[in-house]
Image (cartoon, rainbow over all chains, first blue to last red; front, side, top):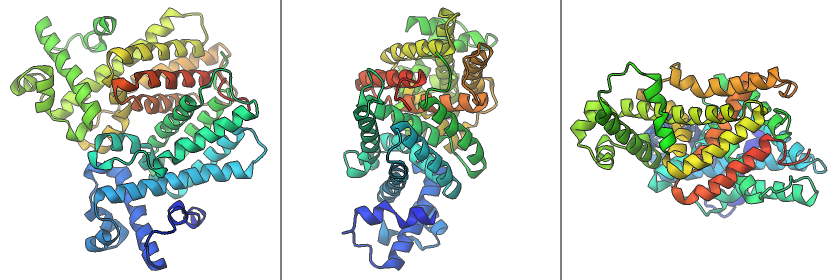
Length: 218
Length: 218
């Protein structure tokens, strides 16, 4: 977990953000961590800034000092979650620079399994995001850098596979990238609480075998 | 579409249900169709029986004659949606009795693409169900016949693959069945409106190629 927080994409990608000193950064991160847990558990509609503030150990006015609305907090939490997940996949690719795209992706999924053990709400929160955004008018954040981070990663991975002659015949890169995101979101949404972490690992490993074409013979 | 309505699993699987004559059955089905569209578009929290009644062309008291609460209507709509989807997959298997489990599943997915053109809200509604049920206390319907219909189908498909020597080495049937459901749910949730039906077909075809192990070479 310390690894993830140190490489927080929010901190790196928005260096100009006026977040003050490290105490403010810590409080902001504590609120985001509590928000991820609360949104994952309750959904956007039922979650409240009051509950999130209590779980983060801050007062409601203090929370509003950092996030002006529940929508703003949701977007910040999602940007953090997506940044963390994409960063984890990119780290996997960097660790195996000469491996096939499939092998890199499978290492990324193994890192997801580890991440889930440390931050159980993250997967469900990220996996539920598309549905939440579609349903709540105050949650429109498409076309931003954060919203594209996942599809950019998968498109790059597939493009690299194409350049190396690994991509299957007739694969449309955009459709395949969206398909992988949909599957991974569906899998992520299955992780509903820490008790299911072991089952979740089995699920992701079955997905790795499918990626490798080892699920069933045609 | 007529095929799906004629083989409505609700009508077949619950023959003892006191649904009255065919007029009552038609009204009930009209309410369910409107509910699927409304729940898909608004989510469970924001959808209301009032809007659903208006879209079904019935009065609110008439709707309450068939469904005592929004939760009861959601469960009936979900039972219908899951029944329709499972029935479609089972029809595909019956059409290709000697084909591999992968080929049967791919034909089922092709039938999903056709279904989506006729009933656009169905996929999104079904794909969002796990998240909705997890978040709303009045939507607890696990351990019923309907909730198991999907996992029963995928377990049978994988078991059949195992019996025929098609199943990959080291595949846990329960985990693989849940994995396939998660992926298909994630894909279904991506279909948010009729305008995306063409993209949705491309997504599902990329998934078929992945199932066959033709996405990328390892």
